Length: 354
Image (cartoon, rainbow, N blue to C red; front, side, top):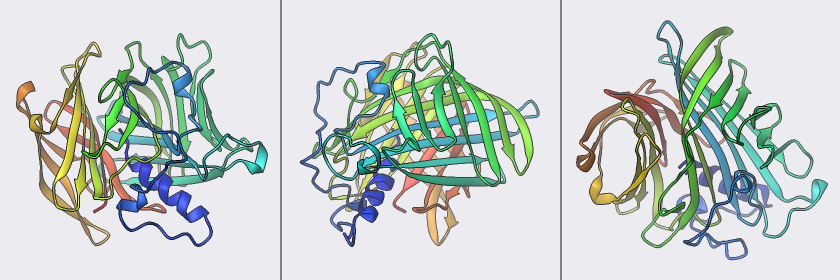
């Protein structure tokens, strides 16, 4: 799950309205009521390819891709691409400039010594940004994530492109394995009060293509991960930030877990263990031991960039280390996000609210 989208989209919504201050009762106002929008409830039956596209009845939605790639010389890179859709008001989509949807794109490349990120904004209804189910495509300006012509299914063969002043990437993503429904058959709770999203992933992508940093092009391959989520009121008023992991294990298993932190110092911790065939087991707080071990000072903040992660029931006991501890996304709203490594695999970590 990429829950940073709640922060970016909610703040974007608030900044787009004249002199409307962000509510102070929850992190970025994400616990504010959204009664006029569609609600997330248990029991949804997912339908594909329709659910790959946009869900206008909901307030917040995102398409999020990360990749852990390296070249033939062993140079390691992290790649991130995200498109956020945010509805400024409830109701059906309108044509042209009357449309009340705002889109936001984030893209980044991280190496052991460099980290570059960029963002884009667009208003809906005029074609500058959008998402469609068939043929699948999500885009903002020239940044795009789309099915390649002739793909056997919408997410079996994809092309991913984006770039900024000092970086670019062009990757082909392929997978023949099934999508994964997170949480309870796609109903992913974020708090004990019942806040939730609809959430599914494709953790089995293989990426290949090019990454460019400071004018030098690298040919790379490696595992990639897609997250899809949508919601209207995703957080409780007491929640202050989150830590989210997606991990590719060398044995073929995949692991997603997140902790949404509370004002009292506790956290809502859950995850999904995914076997090599795509079978899933939901992990609860008692199943997971997650402990920060070391921090990095960035922009006046102490960010935990080395973690102990144990899942005794799966025999997992690892220490994750940031590939680049300075992977600070210094955008309109700053946060930390970058690739991590550990004995037995690689992955991605995102942290907000520090």
